[in-house]
Image (cartoon, rainbow, N blue to C red; front, side):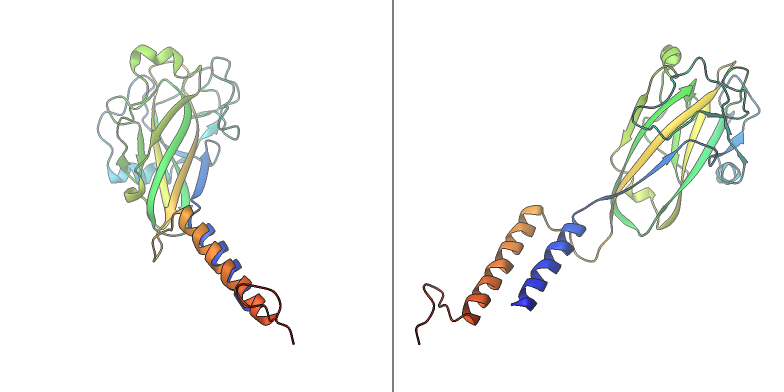
Amino acid sequence: MKKTLFLLLFATLFFSASAKADSVTVNSGSGVTFLDSGVASADFSSAFTAENFTSAQTGTAASVLASTPFYVTSLVDGPGAVWIGTNSTAGTGSGDTALYAISFDLPSTVSSASLNLYYAVDNLLGESNPGIYINGTALPNSTGILCSECLTSFNQENNYTDASIGSLLVSGTNWLYFDAVNQGGPAGLIFSATITYEPTTATATPEPSSVLLLAAGLLGLGIMAFRRKQGVPSGGSPLLP
């Protein structure tokens, strides 16, 4: 009986864990590094190369902006994020267009993954280049805010999602990049990005209904074993001496 109940508990916990997706969240802050374009009013002049992405990874740490009177104060869906820029006064003075980089780690390869990004930016994510990259690959439709919407890009929380980034991820360290384009004057970026993923496993993840059926079956076996041990036949009362 004890062995059967142990198997029941183990199987239920195992399959429940297998069915649960994992996630990792990264926020803008001093842990972000960047490649400075040296330009305060336009995007980078050419497409990014592997060397550019490496330079962003190993570049200067982003400055947490000391003052951001023109920007949304914080992200409702990313309270841990703070405004960053190429210098500490970029929120009130002038800042450059920059390629920002932040890393996140995954314990294994993944079978599927999605990105849910909340952000605000002065002025654009991407312009002549795409605005968001994972491990150097541009994400679709990531030029973010059209120029006609530039005035709202930093006054409100914006959202970008991509439900199919699994093929871009690797086991270990991964990198998320943002091409934050300034169009003159102050410049800044705030973001909170959550990557939700299903780890690659040797067996397929069972559907919740399958887990419940398995648990019910094992529970039935446990009850039958208990009744036999107590001398109770499958259909009735305890056996008389």
